[in-house]
Structures are given as C-alpha cells and as structure tokens.
Image 1 (cartoon, rainbow, N blue to C red):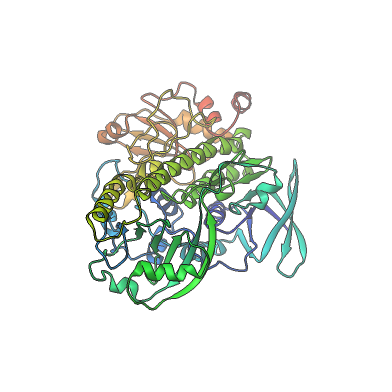
Image 2: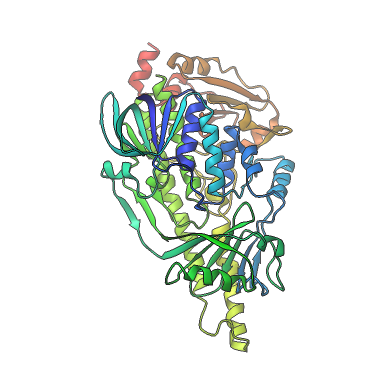
Length: 546
C-alpha cells in the first residue's frame, strides 16, 4: 500500500490529524491496533481552543450534540461524601451559559467556542465516523505498527494485522500518535525526560443510571462535573457525558476495593455496575525530540502530563493541527524545508510549557489534600477546624486545576523560523487570558457579524488581514505568496474599532490562525516575508523572485 501520510494511533489526536489532512485532500492511512474504539473514560473535556479547532473542521456542533447536555452546571466540589454538605463549591458556567456570554461579547476577550464535556468513548467514535467519510482517508483498525525504515524518498512501515499477517505501507511521512508507550517513539530511540511515576492510582468506570437524577442526596452537593473527596486516598469522582457513567480515581490496595470506595463516597445505597478497573501513573514527561527525518510524534507520544488542567489530549490536538498544515504544504510543493523543521520548535515549547502548567496545578491539588489529617471527619471542634482549614486552602489551590484559560488560548510560538521576529511579547500566563495580537499567538476571536468569527473568514490559506479605514493595496504581498505557490486570501475589516482592538493595521495570519507578522505599514520586502512564513530560505526566495 502507498499513501502520503501514515498515522499510527487512532485516539483523538491521530483522528484529528487524519480529518484535517483529509479535508485538505491529503491521502492518509490511519492504523490502530485495537479492533474498535474502546469504552474507556480517558479524557472528558475538550477545552476552548480544541473546540475552536473543531469549529474550523466543521464538527463542533456534532461534538456538542454528542457530549454533555449544555444546561448541566460545570461546578467542581470538594466533599466528604455525596450525602453530606460540600466543603467547597467552585461555580463554573454550563456550556449554554458560556455560549450566551461569548455570543454577547463585542471584543477579543472571549474564545469563539467554550469548553465541552465529552468523554473519550463518545469523542473517538464520532471522530472516526468523520474520518471514514473522507475519500482521501483510510482507517484500519486491528492493524498494529511493528517497525519502519526511512530514506530520502519516504517511510516503509511493517504492520501486523489481527490475523497475524504482515504487510508494508509506503508513505511520504509518518506520524506517531500512539500514546505514552509509543512504539514509534521507541523505534526512533527518543527518550522521555522529567518526573515519572509520581503517584500510582486506580481508575474505575461505573454505570449508575440513578445517581445523576438523585443529586442532591440529603445535604450533599448539587450537579457538577468533578467531586474531589477530602481523604488520604486521592479520591476523585468524575461525571461522564452520558450522566449515567461515572469514573473514580483513588489509591486503594486492589481492584475489588474500587467498588467499596465508590459505595463509601456515594454514602447511600445505590445500584451500579463496575465496568472497568485499571491502574495509571502520574507523569510529567517530555520527549527529547518530536521526530526524526520524515517521522513525527504528536500527543502523548511526545508529552505526558498529569490530567490537572485538562492539558493532555487538548495539547495533542494542537500538535495535530500544527503538523497537519505543514505536511500538506510540503506535500503540495510550496512548503519550504524549514516548514516541517518548525513543528518541533513550535510545539515542543508548548509541550514543555503545558507540563509546567500541569505541575503548577497538581502541586496546588497536593497542597490542599495535604491538609487532611486523622480525625478529619470527627464531629468535634478539632475535626471542624481541620475541615474548615482544608476548604480554605482548596478555595485557593483547587482553582489552579480548573482555571487554565491562559494556557488554553494565550500560548505563543517564540523563536519560530516561520514568524517574523518581534522582540518582547506578553507574559505566558496559565490561569488568565489577556487577548493579544502579538506575533506567534493565535488571531484572537471577535464577531464580525452574528455567528461569524473573524477566524471563520480565514480558510486553509494564509490571510492578509487589513484593519481600519484607508489601508493600502496589498497586491505585492499577494503576488509574493502566489509566486511561491502558497494559497493566500485578503480579509478586510474597515471599522476603526478592529484596528484599536488588535493594535495594528496589517496582519499576516497562517493557515493555523497564528499570526506570522503584523505592522502599521506594509512590509518593505514582501518577498522576504513570504519566504519566511512558508519555510523557505532567503536564497530560495531569491530564486522565486529573480
């Protein structure tokens, strides 16, 4: 078999990469060793940036319909059990409330899309169906990666079918999206470095049809998405998108103890079925490299975080979108040699930064959990004092996990060969988003008319965005990109308020919506800018424009 891109691993990251490549007409094969998507609750939240990406893929509405009902609160509780008054309630908007707030916004302070609670066992089959509907994408479950060799012409990969038969796939490029134990990464002899095996927990999945409808039980907490239990076992109850399924993480002695732990936390008789129990380890690890030659890593294959702050799968989706347009540009002949080189430069710094954000959040959680002590649940003044103290610390520290909008939306590519050097830049913030149109950031969202974001006006092309009245003609910039063969469009926003909000009159935006250049005047050498933004060297640019 032959294809342009072989993708190993059909989790959300590999599927997103396949969809984005397929929508650009790139032939790709996606292989997955599992026979079908599994009913496992690995991730359960697409953050705002991921939902913006899925909006551009045209599937955000499908994901919202498949996920948690938009009216359910996204509150987070710290509890002793589900029948007693919560020690702490952190209120967060339901999706519908967040959508209404975004719709009413008339500046750049909001994303185009809010978060969505959607469990991995819901998201994966949905993405699979979208990928399979694309004529240029072939999805092969029950096919395991075995080995590969690469040379200047491409990659030849040996795969193993479920029947034990071996075959080869020749591709121009390969992407390893095969998770934390990535066989592709191991075949490249790339190490993960950082903090490994910080804590070992068990995770269990339960089917419990009645729990959601019975909440609140007694004086217990109301509806929400996360229930952190104040104990010495790191217990953490999560509502999944169906509201019929729940997951529990805890440090217990064996699998059977997860049933007893669930009953203890619920605190009242309830009918349930335990569907799955498994072990997992907390890691903060980053790959030394994000690939080699024609083979690249994305998602958990390249970075492992503690799932505090929701930066695992969501960071991987960002990897997929960055890699996708660069592969497409290279395969279509207009991408320069520095385009694919920039993938590691841009995304590894985000992986490193998000590992830092995950560490920051997990240290906060550890801090409030460390306030637990024997006698915590006693009906005594000492017990009450312990509970009050833990709640006060959690009111500060638990927010570090749930409030990561800066890491989600405000990330910026620094020292990228594809971005015009602009010294300085805004601080990288984890918890707050301060909209910036600095080079390297994603172009901040704003509504240009009802239900139409400025980012909806930019397709899979570069875009010259002119803001404010009286702007000059951009024919020279358009011609510079067209001589290279790169697609480009022009977007006009003549209202002066856009120029004031974004801080410049002219922007060059990449196909992934990140800002490559900005200025109050047009560039004096548009050919040089076009060469830089498309990954060409100055010498290559000179040949194009000789």
